[in-house]
Image (cartoon, rainbow, N blue to C red):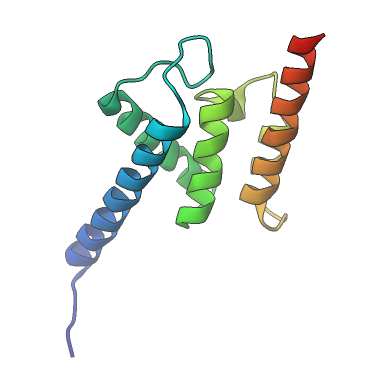
Length: 126
């Protein structure tokens, strides 16, 4: 039976996270056209990668440990801006993230972000 020590397991987890970051970065580069007027800005690929890595670190601070949860958090970060969870314009984000009793927080966060973007767009149209 193969056994791994803690350092090897940590390296494996980091390699898996790096692969996830590669996939998310490729997706975001296709989905979010660089635009300084938008919350996601006009990041270069290395800047975008760093933003994704910072987002994953923050998502982990809220107890998000799966790639699905990280992705939901990262999409919110792209749509609302880095630090959205502390932004007074989005008090619902902190409420959801700090509700440790709630289930599927990342999905609730994502759905609330979609509603916020809808409201923002509607306000722009008026």
